[in-house]
Length: 254
Image (cartoon, rainbow, N blue to C red; front, side, top):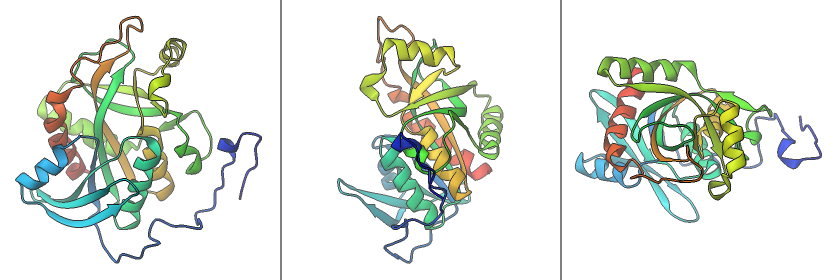
C-alpha cells in the first residue's frame, strides 16, 4: 500500500513487488549465502588476484562492472565483491546479490569521526541515523535503524577472540559528503552519533526488507571532531587489508 505524503521521500510503499525486480535479467546464477561487501578501494580485486579467486558473476552498471569472486576462506565458502560508494548504488548492488542467493553479509569500510577516536580504530555500529534517501524506499520512515543482532554478535565474538579493541557506535549515514556543516555535526553528536559514513542505514534497510542478515565493520579515517580544524589524517589506508580479513572471518562465524 502506498502511503502518500507531502514530502515524496516519506511516501513509503510496502508492496514487496516492484515493476523492475533485481533478478529481471534472469541470469540463472546461484551465489553462496555468505558475502563480504567491501568499501576497500583496490584491495578486493588485489586479494582475489593474489589468491586465484574464481569470478562467478558480474554486476553491470552504467559506469563500471563489478566482479563477484568465489573465495574459500579457512574452509568457508563465500563471495567477495567491491561495493560502490553511496547509499543508492550500494543498496542496488546488494539487493541484486540477495536476489541471487546471498543471505549473510558483512560489509566493511571507513568512516569519519565526529568525536575523538584514534585513526584505524575498529567499530561496530549498533544503529544508524537515516540521513540518506535510499532506505525510505525499503522500510517505513523512522529516524534510526537497528543493525542485525546476529551479525553484531558474530563480529564482536571475533574481536574478542583476537583481543582486538573495538567500540560500539551509533553512525550517521548521509548522502551529503560536502554538506556536513558545523551545525549538523554538532546536532548529530548531541543525538548520539559518533561517526559518519554514506551507506550503513541504507544497507541495513535493504537487508531488513529482504529478510537477510547484515552487519558492518567500520574503521576510522578522517575526523570532524574539531570542526574548525578538519583533519583527513591518512584515510586509514594501513587498515584496509586487515579489515578485509576481519570481514571474511566475521561472516564465516554467522
